[in-house]
Length: 322
Ligand SMILES: Nc1nc2c(ncn2[C@@H]2O[C@H](COP(=O)(O)OP(=O)(O)OP(=O)(O)O)[C@@H](O)[C@H]2O)c(=O)[nH]1
Ligand SMILES: [Mg+2]
Ligand SMILES: [Zn+2]
Image (cartoon, rainbow, N blue to C red):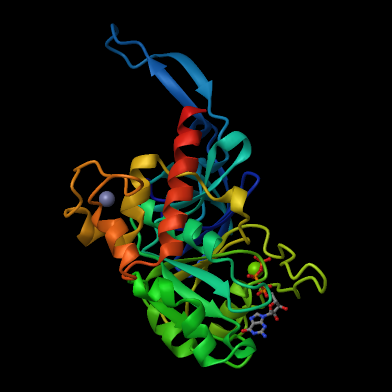
């Protein structure tokens, strides 16, 4: 490593300008030009000679959460020289179906939905959970705005998901409910906070870490929809240790289609049953002696979750043929 080269973590990445956190300090960085290129080298020569260079037209060569190596050019400014390999990621569907890394190198995904205002759309919640599961996470559900409905109603709203094995934490950013549990869950870990717009993601983080002053806005009076107040993902160092990424509210279209074979694996309540289906490649649709469908019939698996699985599988099959 060169003497003035340092390691850091990307807090923000906006149109080619990167905020890097290193040793408690933030440094504004740009990207070394050759990181935007792929090179082909001559194979028949002893010296390494570039025979072709291509520019990569991808926005996320560097994404929030990336570990990078940079050179400080002057105080508070630098150039990113190297992006270290990513371990995990959470993506959104980008322009023309291409995926965009929203945040990477995370340990856990917290999916925030509100109990009311906007009313929770459980079908959409399933999409978020599948998006997390296909990246290898078991998301934790944060049921925010619990103050608007009361304790029993919160449990009732998310009961299917609790039964499927998901951990559900009820919170209220308004009345400071469940915030200690949320803090403990985030402590020492790298978390991505995702969910639709207006559910209170930024509000929760403002309560968890006073002084953050993240922008928040009321949901539309008539539409009951969020206003997409947070516009870009960014990573925040937590005083209690760990990091958390606030992200923009995702619409249904922003959530990536999973591959058809990934969908069943993304429904944890199917896992132990699948081995008991008659056919090894059972899709739990119309096959005879399907243990998953039997469990639906017996009320062990929620019929709505099974329906959600069928919808997402059908969509994945269509997407794969495109
Ligand atoms: N009653 C109630 N209102 C809340 C709670 N949490 C957030 N809100 C309100 O919900 C609105 C939306 O909150 P935000 O924090 O901006 O929501 P967000 O999820 O960050 O939204 P985007 O940035 O658009 O994705 C604001 O008016 C908040 O005051 C809560 O626990 N209870
Ligand atoms: Mg926000
Ligand atoms: Zn089956």
